[in-house]
Image (cartoon, rainbow, N blue to C red):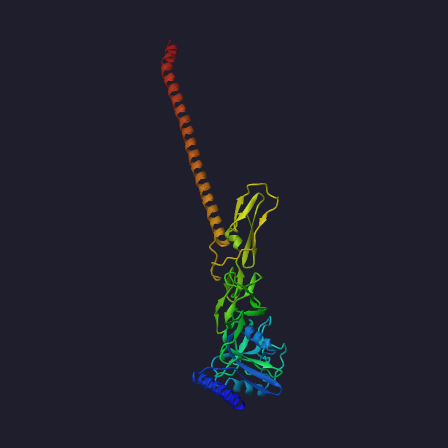
Length: 393
């Protein structure tokens, strides 16, 4: 009996050893850990964003790794030995102002909420003015600032107590994390951001500044509840920025587009951050979110509102197809100038017509005067001899 158990255990050990050898030969990285001074640090190869990685560490009772001392930096170098890619550390900047390069952590804070440290290893001293997180790599152990929503190759977790992972060899791959859902193994990260396990199911949630996509509830899209929000920019190229739907990119800011200026609504229009809301006058009902049609029956006396409409077919950086205020002002100026020209032209025509009328009247008077003069002279010629006759006689 003991011989059979011994053979079975030896077979399992040999099989596990062979599997590890095969993984190493293929260049695969497996999760590894190291404990020192009452803390344990675990290295994970699992593509994730900063918040998703922090959530996984918290689920195991820990948090993303903090590197406060030279000893912790040595542990970090040992964990990443032979690894490829970038890995998250537990350092994040979320200040309201630009970072201070003169401060040790430059305004960053550990995920534990404090900024205590005896060690820094920044790759760059440049100031940052947007939320960024810190990653490291085996080639460059220096702290690299990058967008927190980047999905990089892995992350490092820190635990105050020893942590154990129970896996069933032959069922769960060593490189990929799985969850069991209704009797089936599902691949890790069915949700783009947060995945919340529930009794027999799960649901997805999004990070702050994002909302779930209506087309795919597993996906998240940018969302801004103000008229002006900071753009999501590539930390390595500030020219590569993006904005939520309904916003216009202006340098590194997102400005809300006033869709009401474009005349989308038939009647009343209320602009909202990233969208707009149409409503109709009394006696009309809203149709297709923007059109107003007359009711077939008596209205209730109030306007008919509609849910906020957020346009999704337009690129965030495209301007709305509409007449801007400047263009409208130019058109109005042109119309006023044209009207003034028409008035001047009409005035000139009337003055010319008036001069011609006066000329005709004066000419008529001259002709009458000449005619009278001719008659008088003729009369004088006829009467002249008579006077002379009388005088002679």
